Amino acid sequence: MDLKISKHRLSGGFDPQAYNFIEAFDHRVIYASDDEDGGGGDPIDPLPPYLQRAVQSEGYSIDHCTHCGAALKAGAVFEHEPSGEHVVIGSTCVNRLEFESASEIIAAHKENRLYISGLRKAMRRSWRWKPVISFLEAACNNEAVGSWERGIAEDMLRKLSRYFSLSRKQIAFVRKIVEESPEKEAKIKARKEADEAMRKNAPDWESGRYEIEGKILSLKSVESDWGRSLKCLIQLDDGRKCWGTVPSGAAAERGDRIEIRATFSPAPDDSKFAFYKRPKLIDIVETP
Ligand SMILES: [Zn+2]
Image 1 (cartoon, rainbow, N blue to C red):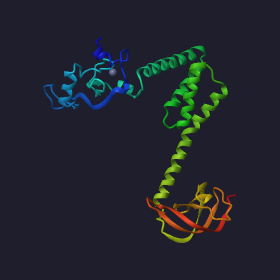
Image 2 (tube, rainbow, N blue to C red):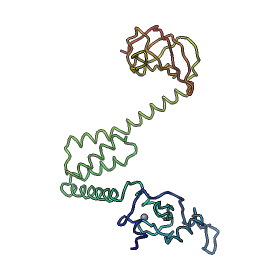
Image 3 (cartoon, rainbow, N blue to C red):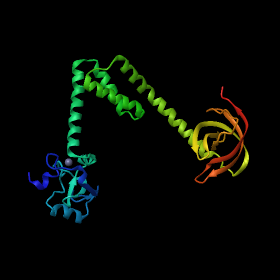
Image 4 (cartoon, rainbow, N blue to C red):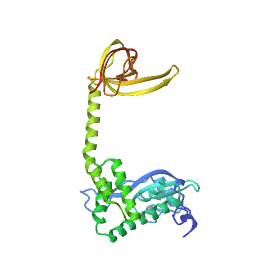
């Protein structure tokens, strides 16, 4: 293989960081149904002629992935920075451009092969790994399962591939969290949607000094030029929220209901949110 093409190959001088995207194309043809002679038809997304000429005049093919040599109809033209050449890279190989270096790609391949062969070995060693592995793989690919739970399933597959062992306790644990996850995720989603709907329907804040009553959602100790003070986020029953200092004399905790008189000013970018000043405690009811 000549040097010209080998610099784009994994076995040659391939540097995944050296390619700049220019234009994608799809030369597959859609035939019109009334096309009687069977010929003709237009490519879905043709490459502009000047780019086609650039690739070909520099000695490359537009029907092949320059990186792996596979024949293709769709892909993208990249400019190879050091040489200024225009080359075609297919949609599978394009993922390789995300890597830092060719050796990183080779290492990832090797690791993946070891991982797969490790899982096969585990299955050969004991019949009982087969259902565990299929359960874990299904969990990793199930989008209804939360990302934390999927991460744990992935981690266990890796352990199994490497050490051929997982305790009964670990398996029971991962089964439990994976099985409970879709319901948990659905609840989180429903709560977020309800919060968002409440926020949308909430009235706008008005500037001025008046009384409000709401629930303390969170507390935070904040440092300022005047020292440390305790701030809180209060949500009113109508969905509006406000933020300010916990009034003196209030032993406030998260979840408590609080009634204050304060001076409110709506946030510049959110009319459902206000900041308050000079709060005076009227009443506070602890959560039981
Ligand atoms: Zn390729």
